[in-house]
Image (cartoon, rainbow, N blue to C red):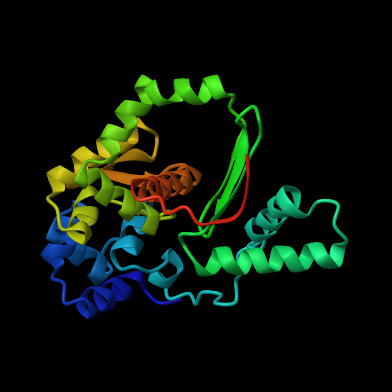
Length: 259
């Protein structure tokens, strides 16, 4: 295991970063960073994720521990299988398995190769299923509920907050750093905005429980550390923006439509 102070020094120098610059991104003094690098003290355990985020690495790498590059995500095939199940129910249910598999395969190829192609099934009660190259929606709301959803006050406020440029910038940052802790200064530096703008945007996102805040007491003072909370909601958020983009310029090219 490599001394963490030496790792911090090496990673900082590799990025042409001074001790003062690193200290500013973390919220500590340059003297504190110097002590870490000299081995006099070690970073607080709650600051390790922040250092990992700044250096775009893992906590293990800070200690010189090799990562397992062969690790794979579990169940990565399930979303694809779920799409096939929906297409089966929409268009091929009851068909011989060989024919159904062929039809689904052909439909998937069409949907995946053309972002402006979609498939839709709507019942008489206006519930339905929508599928395209990026999203699949199963809407179980009644017609009345769908109409009422367009005037919900909380939804209006959320959408209004979401379109603020700095909030969008922080959303994108969170999507790229779902498992990492960070400071407002570090996020601001990567997003090209001021620390105050980043902190204000993070306050908005904290109000919707997209981030959580921890206050760490250090000899230099206190440091506010943010971390993503509920990355599953960011999945929904990206789908929301993708759907909004489609609705802004909807090109109807249906690979199967039933009303």
